[in-house]
Image: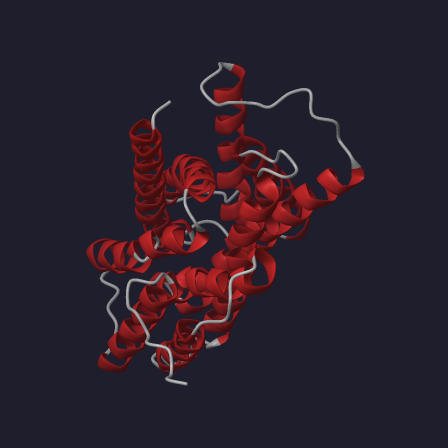
Length: 312
């Protein structure tokens, strides 16, 4: 193969990776207002358990009919299994439970801006785990992220605790670590996107669903659920629970974590626009400033805005 052909193949892979991340960003953005609609009838954990159990069924079905790849013949060593469990926890059980609880506490718009800070955290965690050096942009991005989150939390309507923003911030850190570790461990331990997606959905779906049924069965099986809430759960199942996760992993496989994070800048924008249209959810002036700072933080972390190094 000629050098030109190699460059062409690499460019094609990069385009696919960025397109996949953009698709994931829009799907993830729509999930926050969809969760708010689902909360009309279901509990936060009920939505997570139901949507992701359905999402798991969708992904497994696609594997069975051959539309998704499935790696066979790789031995299950203790190291490989342990890393798969870690990824499933970070990107699955803990992330989705925290995000749904954050939406129930602080609403879809605020959560939609704070949770995607995983783009910033992915840049930070890439330093120790992927061997990237500490850049001025990392420090600037993290400072902007903290300030923006504080401003957003301060605009939470009276009577609603700011705990939702704090939970969303924590889940962002977990998902940022998930992105970095998925790239670090994917090829080394033969943990392909389909396998990681299924493992994550097991934690997000059946495990959360079983816990929700034991603790709050009415939040999973309400007596008279709102039809729009049912539609929202089904949308999440087809969207962020299955196709969104697969698109994200396809992107991480093809492009550096920072470039995936850059494309994910669309997530809070999509969330805010959809929440405004469907729910009439708008930010105050202070909230808009905080949202702008968070977008700036993600742009800096992704390398879309360059921060010059200090002269020596």
